[in-house]
Image 1 (cartoon, rainbow, N blue to C red):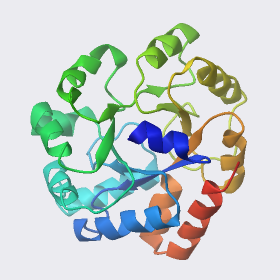
Image 2: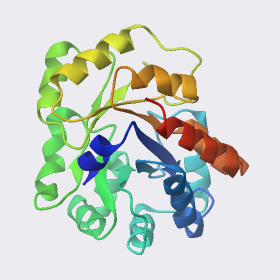
Image 3: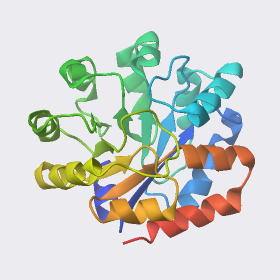
Image 4: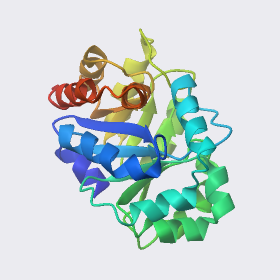
Length: 250
């Protein structure tokens, strides 16, 4: 379902929010806002105390959720009653999943609209900690590929990719960027050539010019910090306008 949704989109627009930021009672409304505005899929961040890949905006959102005692188990329980009709992708560090129990996590996830799983600190070599539990499910384990990955490793990861490839656009953490390095265009072009699944660019994308730039070389974009900040600031019309504009690029 996830890969099909990505492939059917004019340009896939995957939007990140921190689950529990603002309260779990607001999660369904937040997701529905993004869906109504034209999101292809929603990436749900799981709050964690040591988010090594996240910039300040997402770190603060995670801290707010943790301060409200939001847990992975509570998030999954909330999602079991979700009526959202676009795919959800969970972005979690491995620790919360391990603490809950990998098998229990997957069993609970199967009862929700979750169709993808991103674990930034799970190396390709350790993917079998998760993959066997995903058998007989429609949940994809989505790989990240960085700018520093050599072509041989890109090919290795792409060959086994599910759902889509998350192509990291910067050497650093998430957060809005003014410019991107030239190497990302080369990376995305090469990934598109070798990948059996769609390639989406993420990290630092925060305006429609960024979206248009990456639309020229890949299948979609992932936007996080901008979405999290606009939700926190209550700027719902601005957020909806950005999503609608992004989904119409290309």
